[in-house]
Image (cartoon, rainbow, N blue to C red):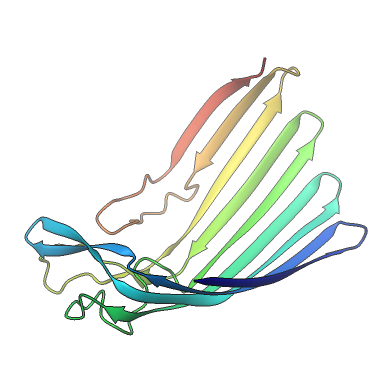
Length: 195
């Protein structure tokens, strides 16, 4: 069951957009994964989970060449009923698995003639997670992260555009989910051709 209500307001001759959304969701029998010992695991139905909260966002265009966007999401989640109540990860009252309480983003984009560039950051707060191993003590929380990315493109002709992208600009070392490291800094370059 999902209930959602929101509002969007545009201001300053459409150069500013503000939005806010409230939501309340209940999920029955979300499929989860739990360890059954060693490197073995099995899928199971968690039971009843709720997630409610709010999202707010803003988009501003202070100049025709500049656009700035930002957003924040707060999620109050909990496992209400569990088919695995003995588990510290899936016990009643625990936050929903891999659902951060706080998350957000910030993006700035600039476009002028043939050049476009943008920088974006994503913030993911701490959340319940598990490495599903036999480590003592077990890892039950992911600390979250802030990751920055950058993109630039140059339109050579109406059909050809050169692109450079840098993911994880600061080379942040993080895992999502636990046990799977993300690439640190990745630089890609290419050409987009349109027909």
